[in-house]
Length: 386
Image (tube, rainbow, N blue to C red):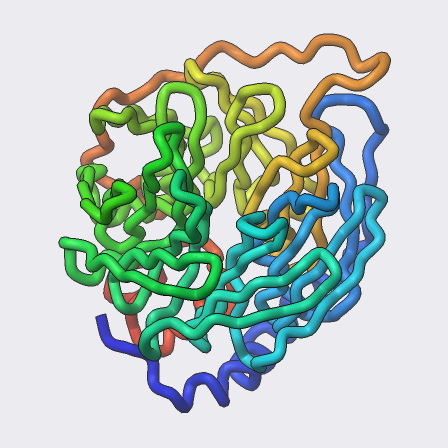
């Protein structure tokens, strides 16, 4: 895969402003919305402080707050359960923070794509940055492995990286060229599983660095989010309009979305034991182990773009609204007086991958910096994603 030119780091802000200004003006003007409290699926939205912040990654912190990587503002935000926001600027400009995780030292660790760094921020807001061994690594996803080290995807160098808490880095090349490793998550046995968005594969890397790849049967499946859950690792595949599950042995099952125009992006395990996912076209969804799907609409979702998702410290589901500059919270457990919520009849499952992507299926919305970068390089067009 070609590496991005260095001049792009200086021009990225101008590109974003010129191409997204009109859309952002519409999305950012949306007022916070709140449904009645206490019922599963109720949505509350909290605006962030900085305009055009593009909240991408988010995670629950050790301080019982939600921490957010602001892709467009080069800041890390801390959001309390009642929506109070504190933002911390990063030392290096144009870092493109994308994903964030709670990790060693009771700190938050995050990826900085354009500057090829892994960042660390304490709960008091002190930031330390660790450069990777060379430029153009473009780290995106990050997770803590069973060895308590940080494991991350290197999208442009086509590798999986491992970093100790003191900054020592080891890199493991992925066998498939130009696979574009995207997000990464830890399995119950401590190994790491990751999505290969351009290759249409799910990868597994052991703690010793051995990589195994499992094809989805279609290079246009575009897997993105991945998380551990009942029966294995669960992932989203927007190109197949499905959520999938892969077992330790590599058996894959796909669960198609009820709506033909869904854009499934990220996924997490909820406090109720089910998997919760973002749908960029509609809002947030929940899927049971058997594949039963419940959809919870977010008002104006297609303009706000629900993005990364996590279980928060309050045992609710939190997600970023990429173009609205907000984070949302979904009630995950029944509250007082809400009664019992019944999942619908399980959707039909596919024990084997689809032979082809749905005709006319719309592409996913990526974080604007990444989206514009890949478009400029012609990489989205090459894969038929634009």
